[in-house]
Length: 342
Image (cartoon, rainbow, N blue to C red; front, side):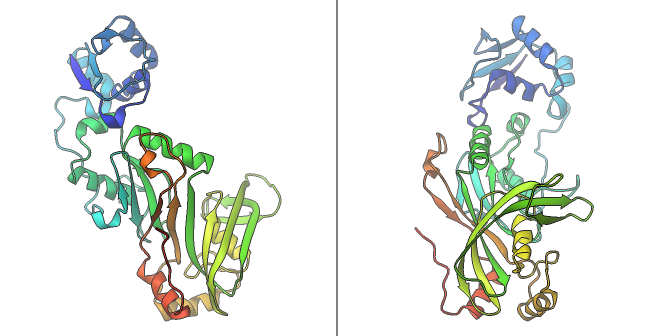
């Protein structure tokens, strides 16, 4: 017999979904058969799988060790080590996390690091956060059996800024809901080539070329095109560069970078979307020693959130300003200071 106690990170899910996480290799007919025969119980009572779990619920599986190991997947083997996997050799530092609770954290991703690894042995900010949680004792091997924490949004490798990381299932569900409904607002800072004034808004369509990993903008719908919407305002500007705050209404791959090139003001430091400004970009990159595009996911404005994320309602959470971007602002706009609303 195997016994599990539902943790806080696992509550607010249907019992059947929970069992599918425990018995990863079992099909639903097997799980429902075990429920009918009372080989699986919830709080020592017969269950039908529709129950919504809460913290402290006790799940018992009256299965042989052989059967359990067959259906439980990677964490089912009794011979497996008790130690947690090592996700990264470079766990994030606490100073990179401007907000954390038991369900969610926001972490600063530097430019040059992937959001999620692209190879089995690779590294990413996702793995670095997982390692931080392992070392801080926030996750255990048992908790990983039921739910593997992970980031809820991606940033391009060479874009810096805040990523959202769900530590619990309910945290993941509520953040995914807020992102899908676009009630959770996300703002970027960008330094672009050329002088811009006032505000701007762009609506159009984006088409991605998978082979070149590059996108193009078109005004009308076309095959495989995705609708995009970008808004922004100029915070400071001169005849060389402009500092923008960008509201990413839709969040598509390379959206800001391709839109700014399309508008004739490519992001400073961008190696792909240069427009007709290649020589100007090269000159400024050399002058400031810029390695990555000056694009920062710098602020999240949270809407009214449901429990247990209610404490985030109305909060604005900011990313630190990377030195590369701060240096350009300081030299190009000496009278401008990036302020944060409290």
